Amino acid sequence: MRGAEGDPKMTMIKDLLLDTGTEEIMHVEMLSTMIGLLLSGASPEQQAQAAQSSPSVQAVLAGMNPQHMIVSGLSAMISDSNGNPWSGSFITASGNIAAVLYVNAISEMHGRLQASRVYELTNDPGIRDTISFMLARDLLHQEQWLAAIEELGGPTAVLPIPGQIPASALGKNEKYAYAVMAYAQNPADTTTGQGRWAKGPAIDGKGEFSYIAEPFALGMQVDLPPAPAKVYDSLLGAPTGPVMAPKQAGDDGSQSIVEKVANKLS
View 1: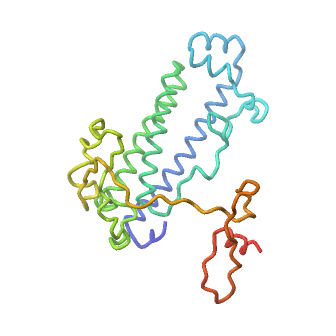
View 2 (view 1 turned 60 degrees about the vertical axis):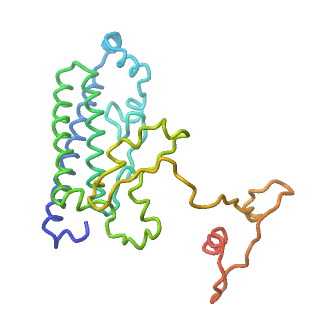
View 3 (view 1 turned 135 degrees about the vertical axis):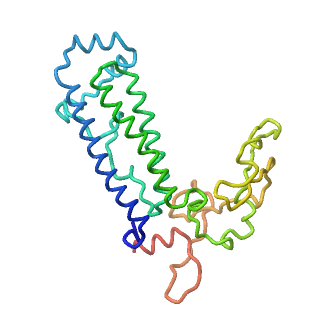
């Protein structure tokens, strides 16, 4: 978080992120321990009884992941329920604190939704007690990230993201920045124009929503030229595009993306 040390509000949010990250590591340990306990001592008879009592459990047991035995030795695996391994690609780190806070709130919403479904799949008091704690904490986490946005001034202060883009960057397209467009073949068939998003002040307080029932073309249809021969897009005997000479020092001529990549590689 850039600038956190010099801004009291950013410092508070940084501390909140560190505290919540620490708590989430604790949650991982709690759930991993719960999974490990569930994998311990489950006899075939107990599994059959559980499957008979619940179609959902039967579906899970019918496709039980043998990797829990082969790879993790009856321990929780660092993967999702489909076996996809956790990776850093799950992390959103755009650097824009307001955008990240919104992502965090949405992640907590989806996580709490899934935890509530797990809660309904079991009557085991120990599991329900653990999931109940998660439901309580995920409720708080949703609220705290939204409260952090309020600490920064709320939607009217942080939206749109990024807010530093000048109107000149939008140019003639500025009039479309708050225009909702409908694409129904028959405009009378859609109710899009009846929503809050089609009229009145925008959420950021900086514009007015409008509605375009029948959008119109702003440009022309463009046919792409054939690719250069060494890209191998063309069929035998089909035309290929021109290949420009590599750009020399001081040459202001343009290059295709293929030639730019080739030059970098060489």
